[in-house]
Length: 169
Ligand code: GUN
Image: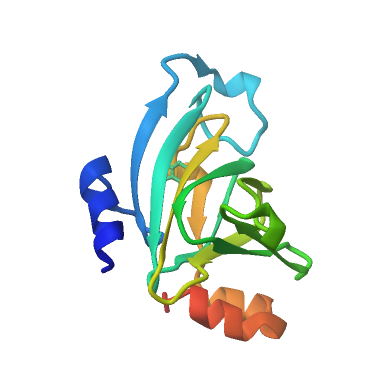
């Protein structure tokens, strides 16, 4: 692991995330929305909003997953990360979160609810540190890690991407 990435992991107190990378929740709204006030896809009440720090070291991509809510990413440090998105109809889109708008990188980006996505730092020796927020607030019930075999069957035209960003069998 790059020393700078290890510094941030230690300094921010980050732990391994099931999708890859390291995170710590930094904010969870003390107020919540009852289930009846939310769309059907949320199985219970949810905090108004949550936020995390999220660090991706090179070689440990964020595996393909999807979430019930739009997620916002805010770039902080390191190199840009490429975010790969696959919508239900198989359309591929990528966006780049990073420090240089002259290079097509956004400081802030949105990943739409329901889209399969994964991310990786663009530099071999790099890392990317971002913050991520969702509203309503995050619960693992609203998060689905991709199954490699299922995604290969569903998106055969993106087999290389699925194999790289989905290590599960
Ligand atoms: N809390 C735990 N994991 C996550 C995540 O992947 N995204 C957000 N926004 N919050 C989380």
